[in-house]
Image (tube, rainbow, N blue to C red; front, top):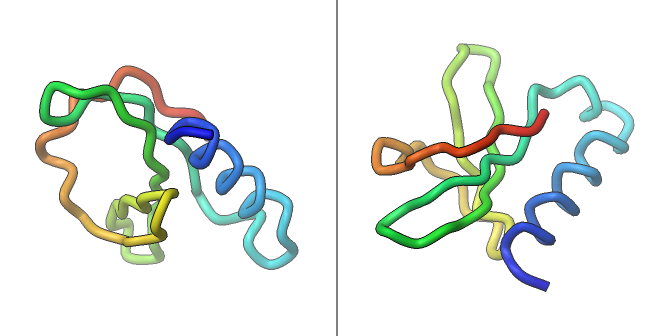
Length: 73
């Protein structure tokens, strides 16, 4: 398994969990630091965008260096 497998699995888990299924949660496929990567994202109640690294569950807002190719929600 690599990053896209982890990202899609985490998105599926969130979308299928009662109480979490309505959360705006998706997967970003893109490029960061000249390397392709998949990561998850969600929007909180304050309309802030957050990134979730699916391989270690870290959460950040460090998205300004992303070149987004596709977002799946």
